[in-house]
Length: 154
Image (cartoon, rainbow, N blue to C red; front, side):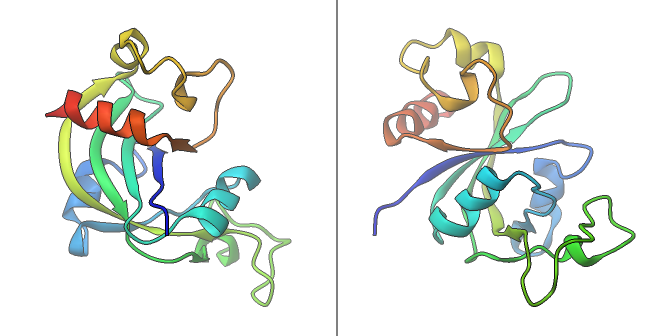
């Protein structure tokens, strides 16, 4: 099986890298994804042990703040069935769930490799998160970009 690499965005006020580190086994369920393409990445392509760049978004300094791994196979996101959740989906049924998630385990917290720093780095210009108009919370990362980013993070 081919190993894949991903960049997964989380708003730190929802789940920060520190929250993930504090969780049992440093693992969090990646709840709340409500974009079909991002859902399909989790459902159809992610495999246990795939590499993850943990990215803080919608904050003062967006950037990569940790290295993680996919820690589970996909399973139904329970928030879609919880009428009190902001991620509730009245059209999703337990026998045919619309939304899937994976568990993500933090391997290491890193310095914040900021969005401007990523943009200024030669060789990363075609990283999906840097492409104009990209707003997906989960994007694939090429192996060459993964290796370059790991070197930058030391």
